[in-house]
Length: 249
Image (spheres, rainbow, N blue to C red):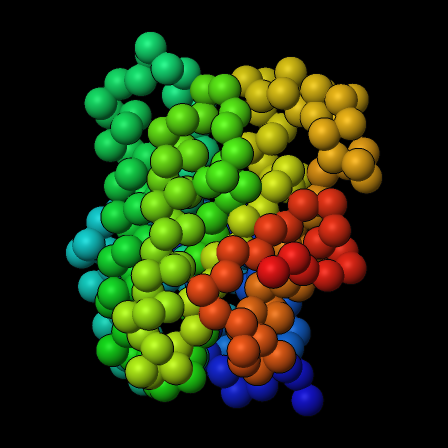
């Protein structure tokens, strides 16, 4: 029997990268998974790739109307949510001195507002003992040039994990944050970050000498979603070069 047998899960941004890899792992462990994404063709392709026990619901987490429709469908079809992985996020660079109001609003609307209202809307469907996983980042505690606004959004996410743990303790709903480091996802293949990627690979910043994979992060998400982590809450689990063999609490 899988570690998530019979559980109902939601993964936002589940149409690519870490979200898609996690959806596959969840299904393989016995869960039924709802995934969301803004791009319908990519979402449909992800559903086809996962193959079973999955429903794709198009929508933007920053749009509260889309969230209302998302949770109405989940309630209608399954009636509950045991696990929520608030994974959707955007990662554009915003160099200090060139930050626009539009860029600032876009980052906070998706990474903070969207995540907050995803969780708040999910709570009425979550039974006692559920698991909430938030996708943060190592940038929440480390400083990198050109990422100040993005880093601030992820610091907010990390803070949510600590405070919501206290808010939800009476319902035994665990809240943890995943903080991936350099993970080999699509944004790292754009020309705009090619120099950063090359520097990471050559500078010794990552002792393993490579980027992590989405599958490696997904395995940590399975741990946090399952009863194996029943005494783990309020933590920020850092996924860097050791993701293959374990987690750092």
